[in-house]
Image 1 (cartoon, helix red, strand yellow):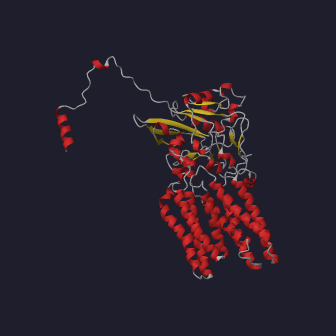
Image 2 (tube, chains in turn green, yellow):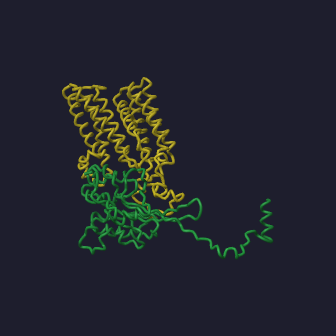
Image 3 (cartoon, chains in turn brown, orange):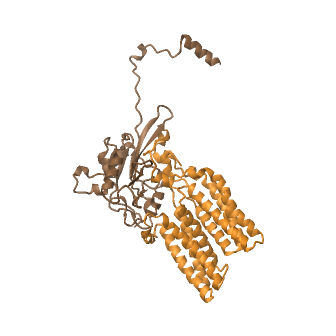
Length: 248
Length: 290
C-alpha cells in the first residue's frame, strides 16, 4: 500500500562521508553490476558503445567545487542514491501500490510487476533517486541491496549493500539509524550528519557527513624571527616598470 | 519538465471534454434527441480521447487498471475513479436526453460535480509535487479548472458565461506565469540546500556523474524550449483568450465560433506546452541546471 507506515521497526540506511569519498565511482559500478545480475529487471543501457550512451543507474557520483570566502576552492565528490525517506513522497503518489516502504526496516521498494511506468514517483522525488528503465518500462531504484543484506548464502562480511562493500575509501557506511548505539547513528552524531534538501520535508534516512574543515599550518615561531623576509617589493628594472605602469 | 505530447493532449483535451460535460450536466444547453447526441458524442470523444492519450507514456499500459487501487493517497488514482464515475453518471443523464427526451436534473448536477472534481484531481497530480515549485500552488488547480470551464462554455455555446470565464482564465493564466517565474527562488531549494555544502562556500557543479545524458536530464531538465517562452506566452494568450473573446463579443455566426473553438484549443496546447517545458524540477540543481 502507498500509505506510509507511521514508524518502522528499524531504519536501515547509509551514511556517506563527503570528507572521505575520492570520487572513484567504484560504488556506481558495483551497484550496477549487482543490481543488473540479481533482483528485478536488469539496469539496461542504450547505445552503450555508440555515439550517445545512456543507461539506468541507481547510484551516481556528482562532483562539486566549493569556493569558501577565503582560501582555495575544494572539490567534493558526492555520491547520490535513494535516501529511503521516512516521509517518502514517491510512495504516496504511486497509483498502483507498486511503491512501498517496508514496516520492518524502512526500505523503500518497487514491486516491478505492479509498476505501470507512469513515472510520477520519479517526478515526486527531489533527489533523482528513481529512474525509469528504458528497456523494461518499470521504475528502478536503490533497494539497499535487500537481496544481499539478509542473504544467508553470502559470507557474513558481504551482507551489506554492494556500494558499501566495494568502497575502497570507507566513505560509505550501512546500518540502523533507529538504534542510537549503531555505528551509523554515532557517526552522524559525531560528525554533524546532515539531510539533503531538508526544506522538502522528506525526512531522509541516509545522512551525509560534511567535509571536515581544512587544517592550517601553524607558524613556526622559534625560527621565524631569524629568517630574513623575502623582498616582496620589486627592484631595479622591475621596480621602474611597476612604478611606470602604476602611473599610466 | 519534458513536455511530452501525451500529457499535453491528456490534460488539455480531457479538460475540454469534462468542461463541456459540466455545462451539459447543468442543462446549459439542455438539448434533446440528435442534437443532444452530438453534444455528448463531442464531450465523450474529448474526455475519453484525452484519458486514452495519458496511457501512451506508460511503460506498461496493459497494467493501467492497477492505477485504481491507491485512491487513499494518490491523486492519479483518485483521478481515475472520478473520471470513470463522471463518465458513467453523465452517460446515464445523456441517455435520458438522447433516447427518452427527459432531463433527470439531479443526475446531471451529480455528473457535473464529478466532472469538475475530475479536472481538479488532474490538476492535483501536478500541484501536489513539492519538487516542482512552479506547479506546487493552488494557482495550478485554479488554472486547470477555469480553463476547463472556459473551454467547456465555449463548446457549449454559452456566450455570456464563456466570455466571463475566458477573461477570468486569461487573468489567472497571467498571474500563474508571473508567480511561477519566481517560484523556484522562493521555494528555498537551491544548490546549497541540495548538496548541504552551502555553509562551506559557494557551490558549483564541477562534473556531472556521466559524460552522456540520462533519464533524469531528459525527463526533468528541459531547457531547450524555454528560450522562446515570452513569445509563446503572447501567442498562447492571443489564441486561447484574445481570439475567442473578440469573436464572442461580436454577433458571430457558427463558422466564426468554430474558429474561436479552434483558436482556443491551439492556444490551450501552447499554454500547456509551456506549463511543462517551463517547470523546473529541483533535481536539476544537482546538475547545476534548472
